Every structure is written in structure tokens, then in C-alpha cells.
Image (tube, rainbow, N blue to C red; front, side, top):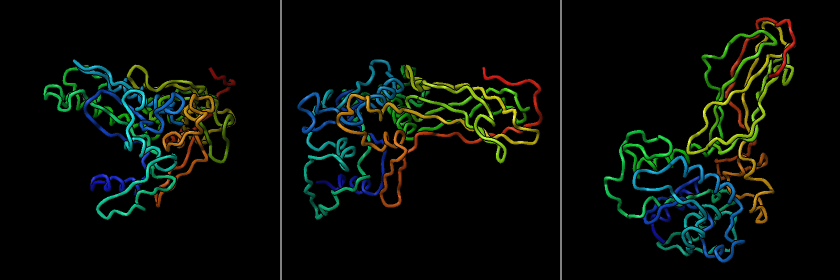
Length: 339
């Protein structure tokens, strides 16, 4: 109905967004779909098929964003539960416009074509969060905060306020778009080892709430792969966000394969599988069908593919670090064991 709405509509038609946020004033919350009249009338109806992921995401955001002096934590939950339903909220439009049924038919003004409000299967599958930043529509300037320690987890430090807290919110939302893993402490990692030698590998991960599995992947080009290249200790089941803090470095051990000889080069990567429970048939909302958002499908469904013109999202379940290499310089005399 407005030029602003038409402009936003064109942006969504032209891109594929996984996560987005709208900021409001007048309450104090991070909320998510559903928030419409169609899904508001019974407990069974107001759960979206991505509810497990939305709750996990916003709970992690709530803890990291934190509180500051005189203000508490953001409430989190479904719009229909913690605020009220509306007819035509952006959150539901951004999330369900490509696939949900029962919506209203748009009647644009100002000669804007109604055909521009019909969407393909990919444009509107974002998890769009509604953030009510403060009870006051115009908070006092003394509560806005400063640039000091803006990204410090949990807030409540000197200089914190509405603006730093919501910078943290945008930061964690940006980080969550895609899982990542990185081998760290490279200065302490030897570049040369004997076959059968053991080495500690430190790595960090992000872009997710939980690491379900972690593996060390080793390849000696032209010589060996898998257990012949290295053995490793890498079973995993760990939250990345607890108490408002992202987990630090994890440690795995690998042992260079005894089948390797001097002159061989071992290429090593860490790979992780994350947030698989978000697509599980055991989640409460599974009776409403499989997840529908790009955010969830892109990390839980290897067959997933969404296309909008030249933009593509493909599903992955394993996310790999960049490669580090270790040169094999000899052979240990004793057999190795994985500790």
C-alpha cells in the first residue's frame, strides 16, 4: 500500500534471505512466526514447522545480547504467544510468503502491479525476527550506551545500552547465517611429523547453536585416505552457545598413519555437522511437516536447493575448515594408539 512497502517487496523478490530482523519499540522481546490470525486460535495451530530452530536461535541470541543496568533480558517466543496476532505482519510474510497457504490477496496502490506480490518457491522462506527493543518508544539518551566493549557477551558492563545490545544482536544473527569451522593455534601445529606421531589439533566453530558431530579428515594425495592417512579422536555433541558465551577452542588428536613414508604430505581438515535436531522427525512441530526455512534446510538437508534468478542456496550437512598440511619426515618404530 505504500512506496516503502513496495520497495521492500522488490528487495525480497530480487534476493534470497535466510535471516532478517525488524526493530520496533513499545515492548521488550525477540519474537518469531507465527504471528497472524490464521495460526492463533489453538495451541496446535500456532506452531510453525521451524519452531525448534527459531527457539534455539532466539534463546542463544537472548543470552549473548544480555541485559544492561536497569533493563532485563529480552523475552523470546512465538509472536502469537508473547504479543498478539496481526493481519499481514512482515515476519510471517517473509517466512511463509513462498509456501504457506491461506494468506490474503494483496491489492497494491499507485499503479503497482498485483503480479509483483506473487512469489516463487524461494524468495520468502526467511526467519524474520521481530525485536521490540524497549518499552519506551523514545528511550532516554542516558540508556542508549557507548562504543565501549560493544561485543562483550551478556551486557551489563559500563557503557552498555540499547544500541550496543542491538549491535550484538545483529552480530550474532549475521554469524548464524552459515556454519563455519576453523583450525586455530597454527603456530603451535608442527609442519613436519613422523608417521605414527600424535598431534593435537585445536579448532573453533560458529554459525550454529550445537555441534552434533566432528571429524578430522585426512588425505595423503596419491597415497592414503581415512584411517590409512590418520586416526583421530573426534566424537562430538556440544553446545556452541552457553550462558551467553560462544565456546572457545576444542581439541582433537590425530595420529599420522603408519602407512605413510618420508616425503608424503598429509592434508588435514576439520569438518562438523550442526543443528541436526532442527530437522528431526522427533521435534514437536514435525506433525506440521518438514522445516520450510532456508536457514534450517540449508544445514539439515543435503538435497535442498533454492533458486531465485542467479542466487542459489544448496543444502549441506558437513561443513569443513580450510586445509592445513603436515609433511611426513620419517617413521616411528612403535605402533600408534588413539588416546
